[in-house]
Length: 272
Ligand SMILES: O=C(O)c1cc(=O)[nH]c(=O)n1[C@@H]1O[C@H](COP(=O)(O)O)[C@@H](O)[C@H]1O
Image 1: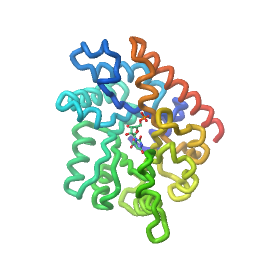
Image 2: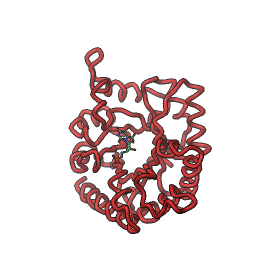
Image 3: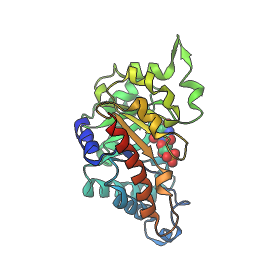
């Protein structure tokens, strides 16, 4: 998927919502546990109930890997379902990979070729040769962690090295990578006050912003400095949507939560 196609989907749906498919067997409605593949059944119901309100789905691979082969199969089935039934929707593998070049190439093949994801989250710590193998896939996005939503973000990311915060150096250096126009950056919604400075460094790249809802980030605050004339934002919510109800109405409850976020996004888009 190209950036232009993503922007056109956002304008069509009046939404820049990304729904995180962090499917946790201990949190899904108990009646689904009787099904042959509870993870896929849950994801299918969530996707069918919310696809018109969002432009991206982001399965976090940890939740699938934790279930072994069955989890991996459920992830593959979920991807096949979304890509077949809703091909216009961006799919993000939240895998947070990062390794030396030849290994990075295998990660890229696993998620872009085998599972047909449109994008993957990548940790920048190992530098250029660990990121560029992902960027070689021309129709795919590589989403680099810049300033994350968790408290531990202050351990390293905001520390100054030679006078400049590490997350700023990540942004600036990543822009020198080959095919950097295919980069997006992760900025936590809990760090909204940093967005003005971040936008000054990366005015054009999309930002993936997790941390609204369960982690306490504010959508309005994120939009204040993050939104650009070409939108430039994907705001993610996982638990706040997926687990709105543990009853048989879980998909309708998820749709309602997604609708509230979509409506708030439409208001923000009207301001630009
Ligand atoms: O890369 C991510 O998606 C990510 C980066 C970050 O800084 N913070 C963060 O919460 N995430 C992911 O975004 C999702 C947030 O989930 P909720 O807090 O339930 O909405 C989880 O899958 C996290 O792993």
